[in-house]
Length: 94
Image 1: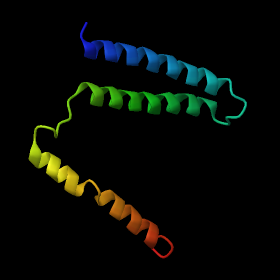
Image 2: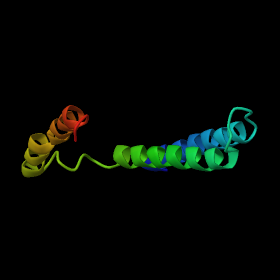
Image 3: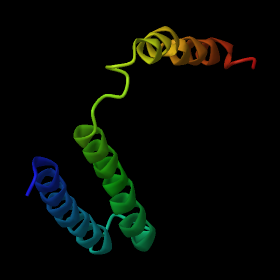
Image 4: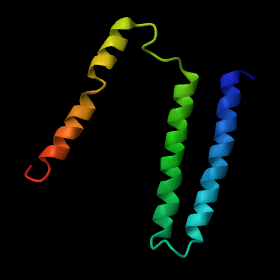
């Protein structure tokens, strides 16, 4: 078994156990008004983050060997922050 297969197997088992725990906790909770919705969405969101993390961990960083891609990502990677600050400052009046 390769290292990536062990990673996916271990991550999958831990993720499945955590998702099952979330479903049980959500369905038996007295604090949730929409138990079925919570028991459906929380494991779905959690497992999607787990899958994205496992994919990123098993694949090599795509920009490490391509200097043009790395440069574009470095230049435009912070554009989000400028747009976000602009939205924050323009919020009261739009």
